[in-house]
Image (cartoon, rainbow, N blue to C red; front, side):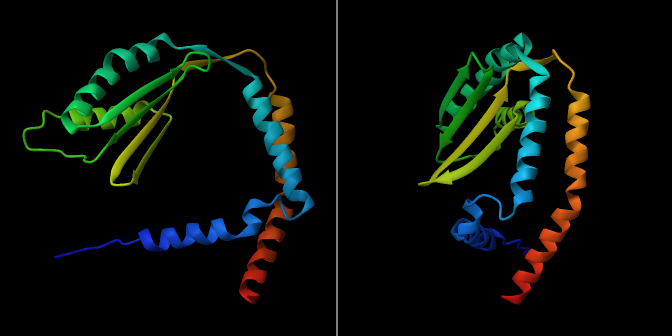
Length: 184
């Protein structure tokens, strides 16, 4: 039995079409597009301004004493290059892994599986990519805790209400887009 799920070509075609579409790179097509974007940005800024980031010693300790030593073992076993960068001001870290292979062998002690699962669980974001016959894995870690210093919940709720009020405009726009696409 053989089963296939082949989506790579379709995905690449969709991405190419999206990137070739000049409208993709332009600001919104209507006044409410920029209005919604402005409201969304204000909401995000207000939400973020309620908090201050403070160093999480527990996260630093876990990254440096447990996860990175495991990563070094994996890098050695797989023949990878591995670089850890820590931004002390932002309390974030990136761990970049690069190599030709990602091999799990019968004699493996589980370090590869443990590293990948723990790194993916601990990371805020994770990217796997291939370039010039190299596998690249990048993990982004937040090494901070957020402490609430202000409460802007009323202003945030007001902005959410504004966004909800614009939902009808969004529906009309999407319907218009669908009709335009259908006519093509």
